[in-house]
Length: 513
Image (cartoon, rainbow, N blue to C red; front, side, top):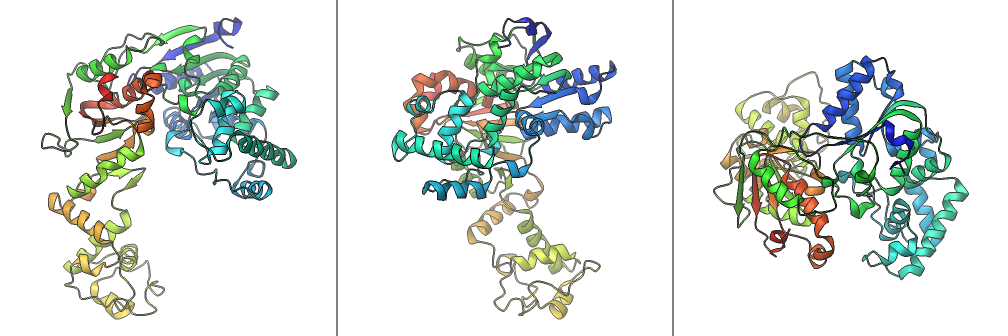
C-alpha cells in the first residue's frame, strides 16, 4: 500500500516536528498550485478533525480570496466519504436508530452520539459499540479485538457478538451507515473524484481503513503530499496505524526549524523521543532563545506566576486534570476547561450589571435578563415579571425603572452576593477569591486545563505538565512505554517559553520515560 509501487513517485512525505509550521507549509503548497493554474476544486486537503479542516478552509479563504464552495474538497476523510457516497442525515445512524436497535436486541446501548469529540476521534461511549467499531477501524476480527482489550464487558464475547450481529442486521435492513461504515463503503466502491493534487494532514493519526481510503484518493490524483509526525502519534488506542507513515515510499521532506520550541524545552523533548527506536529520525532545531524548564514537587507554589502570559495545564487524563481545579478556585484564578469558562459569561454579566445599577449606570436589556436569571422569584421579583415580557431592547434600564416597571424588589444597596441569590455558594466563594486577587480577573482567560491528547495542535507561553499516570497505564507501563513517551513528548512541546514539570503525586514512573 503506497510503499514501493509506481505511485510512490508522485508522493512527497512531509514530516513536521512540533512548531515547524506544517499547516503553513501545506497552505504554501496550495498557493503554489493555484498560481500554476490548478483549479481550486481540483485540490484536495484532507484533515484528521473537523477543527483542522475548518482551520485550513478559513486560512485558505482569507489568503487566496476564495469561497467555501471553491474549496469543496477541503474536508475530513469521513466528510469526503459522506459526500462521495451521496449520503444525507437520513442515511446515518442516529439516536432514534440506536434506540430501536436497543429495543430489538432487548439490551440497552449507551447513546453512541456522545463521543470523545475534543480529541478528534469518534469512539462510542458504549463498551460493546466501542469494541465493534474498533475491530472495523483496525481491520481485525471482533474476537481478536475482544481478546486484546482489557475492557470488561458484561456477558463476555458471546454477548458482544450477539450485539454485533443484531446491529449489522438492523443497518442492512434500513440501509444505514455509521461513521466507520462510510469509510469502508468508500473503500469498497473505490470511487474517488479525480484530483490534480491531494494533501493529507496529520497522517500519523490515520487508522488502517483510513490509509486504505488515502491510497484510493492518491491513485486518482496527479500529485500527493502526506504530512504528519510519527513522534506525535498518540492515538494508537483509538485505532491509529502509527507505523504506516514511516513506511511510505516517496520523497521525504523534514521541516527542520521550530518557531515555537526554545532550546531548553527542545532538550527535554529530545531526551524523551530519542529513546524510541522505531521512529523516523528527524534533525530539527529550536528557536534561538533559551526558554525555561523547572521541576516542582507540588502543583502550586510561589515560583509559578499564572499572571505571566498564557498557560496550559496538561494531564494524562481528565481525572488527573480535574485535580487542579480546586487549587485554582481557592486561589482565585480564572480558567477554561473542556471549552467552558470557570465563570460563565451570563453569571459575570449579572454580577457586573448589578454593580452598574448600584452605581446608577444604565444597562441594556440583555444584562437585565442575566440579572433576573440569578434572582429567585420568591418575593425578590414580583409575580409575572420574571420573564420581562414587557421589556424592550430599544431602551436602557436603571434601578428605578426596574422597580417601577419590571417588578424588581431587591434593595439597591444589597451586595451582589445576596442580591443574586441563585448563584451557588461555592461559585460565590470562588468569584470573591478571584476579585480579591484581581478585580478584573474575568477579562483574562489565560489558563486552560486539558488532557495532553486534547491539547495536540495547541500551544501556550507556559505549560504546567502533571506527570501522574492513570493506574491502568502505570500497571502496564512496560508494554506501553513508547506510547507514553510520545504522549508526554506532545505535552512538553506545547510550551513556547517555559515548561513546569510537576512531580507525580502518586508514583515515580515519569522519570522512567
